[in-house]
Length: 279
Image 1 (cartoon, rainbow, N blue to C red):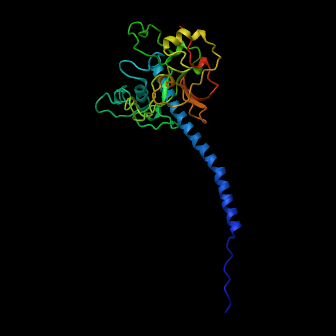
Image 2: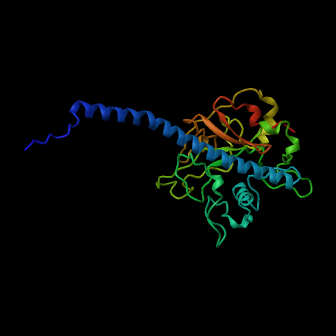
Image 3: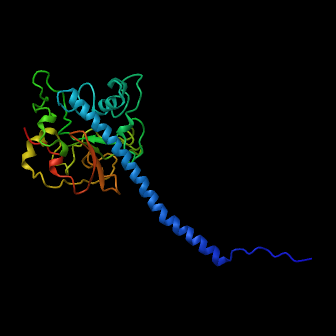
């Protein structure tokens, strides 16, 4: 009876070579996959930015070139933009009390377009990860008779800006986190931002009055201070700033005053992009 011969198997050396090749392929592919995922998140953020840009253009068209306000007695920009993007009334969205519900029986969420998918701090449906240039989306209630803000500054309009394509309106912003310890427990939403970027450019100017007053005193071609570029617990001087959360913490996405959106890199944002010209 002929003897059966067992099929040849892998030797140990051959097995190690195969494993090494697989490990090498994984090592090559994983960074590429990670970069692809990061690029997809950035594109999703840019999609959000463009939706907010369209909302800005719609508002200025409907309201005689006036820009929205960060807040007034009726709404803040979170609620206004959610209503413009989703086509629902402002009253549908929560109030401005740290993201908590101020109105009974409303849906406790803002539009998903107000949350960046690249945000580092986890968010929920009541959070927002973008903030506004307070020199364009100004504070306060305009007078019904004079059209000026309560601080007597002209409420900025699209036709008052020299270059709509170079003036930032909304941008990725520093997020808050809370760890549940006093004195900050429960005071701020998890992953939320302030409405206004009043500490950008190293906090040299904080309110629209200061920006407009000092606008002619700055070199428009000077690069702004990038800021700490971190998410914080509750350090006011280190929050309310730009968050360069894209491209390995070197990129940021802007809504511009003409309604378009784009990505910017650290070192590319100039004073002219955040300081409107004085009245």
